[in-house]
Length: 111
Image (cartoon, rainbow, N blue to C red):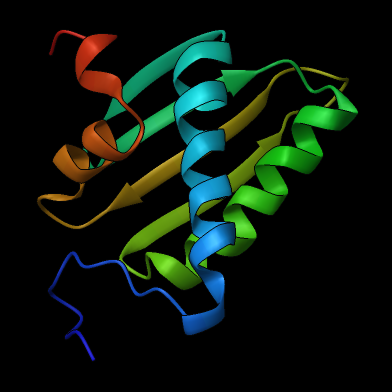
């Protein structure tokens, strides 16, 4: 079992297929379908239109990622009056590089 300082994915035995789906969602939707991406001090924030299907997809992604990647701080926020949907993915030192790799951000961002 990893210590709380390690950045290691923990894959439940029965979750291999769900992990592949989750990673596919991250690569295809977060990196490509966001309207804006902001680099934060400890991670990234991604803005989306608050469409029902996108809200469900992001909620499902978060529900699995929290089990697989316990080193992430995951936050879904929908601002009042139908403003944007935000997904914030943050963590301790070193997590930003992991997020870049996991979400395929190296090809989309130049930090």
